[in-house]
Amino acid sequence: MKKLRSREWFDNPENPDMTALYLERYLNYGITRDELQSGKPIIGIAQTGSDLSPCNRHHLDLAKRVRDGIRDAGGIPIEFPVHPIQETGRRPTAAIDRNLAYLGLVEVLHGYPLDGVVLTTGCDKTTPACLMAAGTVDIPAIVLSGGPMLDGHWQGRLAGSGTIIWDSRKRLAAGEIDYEQFMQAAAASAPSVGHCNTMGTALSMNSVAEALGMSLPYCGSIPAPYAERGHMAYETGRRIVAMVAEDLTPRKVMTRPAFLNAIRTASAIGASTNCPPHLIAIARHAGVDLTLEDWQTHGHDIPLLVDCQPAGRFLGESFHRAGAVPAVMAELLKAGKLDGDAITVTGKPIGPILEKVPEPNREVIRAYAAPLKPSAGFLVLSGNLFDSALLKTSVIDADFRARYLSNPNDPDAFEARAIVFDGPEDYHHRLNDPALNIDENCILVIRGCGPIGYPGSAEVVNMQPPDALIQRGILALPTMGDGRQSGTSGSPSILNVSPEAAAGGGLAWLKTGDTVRVDLKTRRVDVLLPAGEWEARKASELPQPSIPADQTPWQQLYRQTVGQLQTGGCLEAATAFHRVAAKGGLR
Ligand code: FES
Ligand code: MG
Image 1 (cartoon, rainbow, N blue to C red):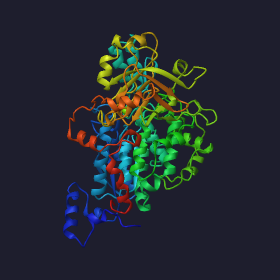
Image 2 (cartoon, helix red, strand yellow; image 1 turned 135 degrees about the vertical axis):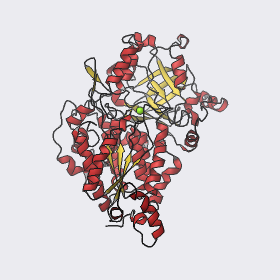
Image 3 (cartoon, rainbow, N blue to C red; image 1 turned 30 degrees about the horizontal axis):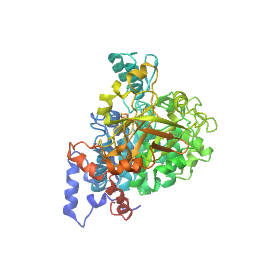
């Protein structure tokens, strides 16, 4: 077995004074010198839970079982905090903290005597932040997901995280419910500890982490309060100790074939629109070449197999009981859409693991040959307004299709009059202004919401129509923007537009009243103007200033260093450090 890096801190007779200094303070709460010098691996537990992070708070309890597993397998656990990232509580947006938590975790994994680490994940950005850091530092690492909340119920129906909010705000606008009922519905969707119970970004990203091979089978979806979740915590703790002995590092697991497996799995589960930027960011920090075009090439033709909100009906508990990620991956493997040779944290390839998976509950997880929707992955769009944007095809419903995609001569395209908003405040302020004359022939556009503009990139593109339209039964308009949207939203928006307006992207010059053509067949979105006029407008008119002042030092640093959503919204300078790790420099 290769020498443990923790030995350099705790057992270096050639440098007794530093060894003494490194060692003595860890004795002061009861660890003995014998333990620290025994040659046992020191295993970090990267704790993302806290009172500030309710989605992950359950990890404070699960960590006890992780410790038991580490101890029983012959390791020494050391738990430490990760910068909190609470999706719903963080202003201006939690996205800005993904890269901050990443930076902090890299420093901890590199700078302290840790031989391996259990990454506790859950709420949206906690999973990519942890995996990005694991990719950079490349010490043995395993994901322990916290699991979704139990299924919520309100008025006799399932109430899914986030999704119930988007539905209820329309019902509020239509006058069907009042403020009090709106709050009751929201509360009912959060019935236990755990993260969002819809196939939003949290459940998607934890499923994707499992599909990547970075957690034990079924880890991504066990509901947080289930006994199995505690069992999984224990087994994960046991397994990381063996991974250290095997020197099974993240970059041996997170290979390009594993990322393509993750893309296909994401498409089949109807994953969040946040998955492409997060997965690209993880890949870039792990030194793997992965682009948005890979989502089109490898993901778009995959059918929707999982009937979960927001693309379908069910929630996390049903998904887990039906067979979860392994059942979905087994379908993909049988259809020849998965690389079965990809190694997972088990140390074994995924293929043989999937061959033992039982038949799923077909009401929730469909067979590849009998899917909920064919070709349901993301569409990657481009055009004269932007280099790239995403559209989640699995959430295009019959109503939207009938309204916008049913012209017999042009069935995959529509044209709409742009209504342009500068950020969410402007949208909320002006949406119901009768002077805008918004009708069903409009596309709502929001700009100033990207990584630099907001900062962090806001989840706001799933804009709802004006109240008057909702009252007439028009519940959705086409939308487009340089921000993101919640993974719990079922809106078929054109989002993650890159480059964003604040970085000189085309949306900066778009005007209310312009005609926008969306063609899903050619994958193009263009503003229709007489020849030369768009170029002339861009050459002669300065875009609207859309960057508010930095409110904190981190906002300033973030804006100076962040890339666009197309390439993962990374701290660009940090993406080169996988090379340092490859030369042994970060070990
Ligand atoms: Fe944390 Fe959805 S808000 S998981
Ligand atoms: Mg979100």
